[in-house]
Image 1: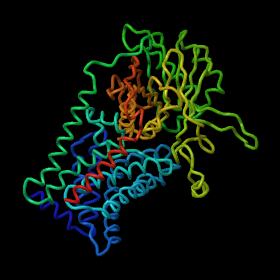
Image 2: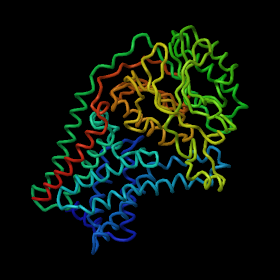
Image 3: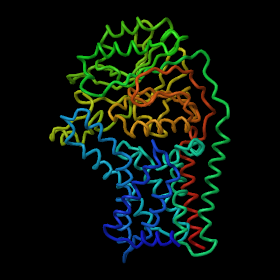
Image 4: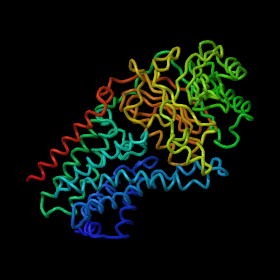
Length: 531
């Protein structure tokens, strides 16, 4: 009875009380995201979402659509506000330049992103059935809106609703079949199923959807327990990795004037012994440094390359993030600058590079259609590169001596499901170099790690992640973290390289299973409506 009374209060709410309910309900979803990962709490935002749409009434279809959209916008605004508040930290790195614009990241971005769940709520209301069928309609509408959010205007698939369940390692294995968007479809349905207990007819029939949801949840847990082997993953023979996490502040100290001091710090830390029986870098085959490690162009600084060569023992290779200058094109006054991964051999020669393809809008470049307007109000991209970075032409595997082919992912390239694989043969592992120092000791780095971790599950490939301020980690092909360095600490991590698993259905077919589930959900909902 109390549950039904709660449902009635949400359904009958109007005006500002309803907006506040939607805002708080959406914000509660952030509790199911990293770093808390309280995944059972997904029932709160999703159940209340059903009741909010139930209460979107009007004298016409258009009125009901607008009422549902309004509820969905407030719900989405709460979710994104609570889940992305940490973006404000980036505006404080150079506070004299960017602090005044903090509301654009902390409030304006969530307000824009809330348009996607608003459209989902409104569209769902147009075909809203009675009974348990509406649970499936909501799941389809929100999952498709998240797919759109991940693709429209270069995409921003951060904190997709499926991530609320991805923190549970067994449930996360479902992404190896359907990917993140399929996991989102199921997550919304599971979270929304209890809504019928507050609105269904008395009797055993109203328990059908919650009991089915519980059975599906048990099935997901069982599938994950079956898929993850009990033993640790085997490792690639002869590979000894050293991950270097310098914990360098992302502030005014990171500039060319301090380039030598920064390099000294990297070299000393890289050669640190981790126990009485280790010999520093002498014990490793591959040394890995984070994204954009230098406040200078490594390829045009022979002194730095010479000092790196002096550090590296014979047959040891450095893989590092660095800005790279291309060739100056005719008619241009400066060469294009790429955000790159570069491979340096023991002679100090750069033998391979990968240029970041998916740049961060406003962080690494300004969208062309907004550049004039943004610069006119005194804003620029966050990176201290005149004109910003230039995007790489395409994803290519990185060839590194002694390693299987590498799928390089720089920073938030790792959050895009289905876009992490290079052209050509399947790589042996993914390498994610990032600099989360922009976001300090906030939720952001934990969320970033969780999304990279899910890519390992989707692809059945291990992932090596090296972050300036953390969290650096080695993750096996099932998403298990085999070693890590905490956020905000300086250190090195020595690790073997886990072997890859079998090719996953998602790696082979992409979003095909997600599309199939959408069709199944719609068909079942229609069947429920016809009864």
